[in-house]
Image (cartoon, rainbow, N blue to C red; front, side, top):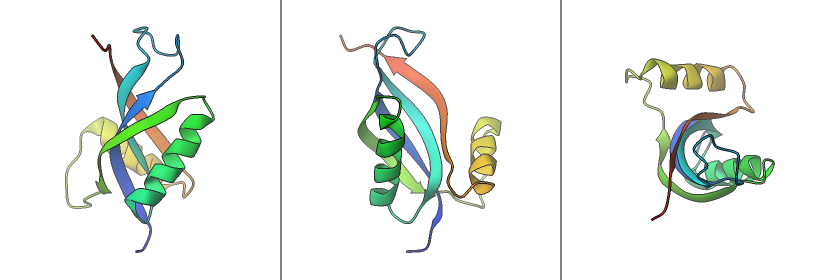
Length: 99
């Protein structure tokens, strides 16, 4: 498969104190160049590990739909990814606490 810009919703485990909420788990939207979900997972896992964070799961992943209108935040992530073949762009973190 040819490389394209992919977007995924990833569940991430971060170090204590890294998120303002105090939580260590969050969902984050990610954009990067990939040719498969496996490639995306590998790239995101390696990137997160540089912060001592871990990828828990990928909830949704697919190549972006060029005909779709995205929110300003997501469109910016896509544009930044498009301009850099090595980009891995993390969006806003949505933290949660396990009860």
